[in-house]
Amino acid sequence: MLTTGSIDYRLNEGLQLRQMPVQEFAVVAHMNGIRNASKSKLFEAFRGVKALQNETAIQLWALWQEVEELCQRSAPLILDLSDGEQVYNWLVIQRKMKQTIKYDAADVQEILADGK
Image (cartoon, rainbow, N blue to C red; front, side, top):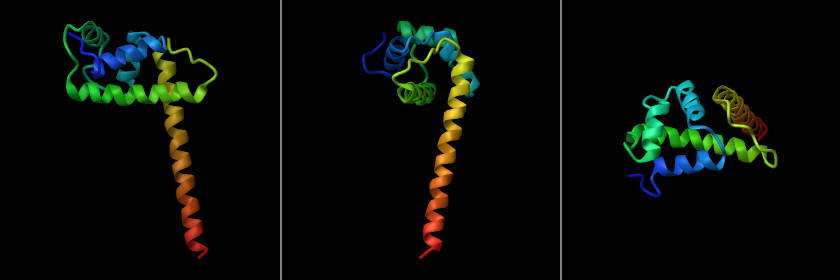
């Protein structure tokens, strides 16, 4: 039984809200190295047949949060999430941008510290 508030339930709701096919989310999960997140496992979880393993659910939720952030950053444009490989590529770009910003912030801190 799919429990309201469970990660499985929230993932399913999020995918439906953003109109991302389950099989494409499974592609993104696979490309991110998340195990036990095949299309069939996700469908079982979303139908309430068999819940996702805790570790898998946590990893998938973290991945979904990244996808959600990507969608929010693109607003008011609506991203087409129907191609898992493309979504993965967008996530890679988003991660690289975050790393660049992180390094730039560290450089600024270093420059400020040297100037004192």
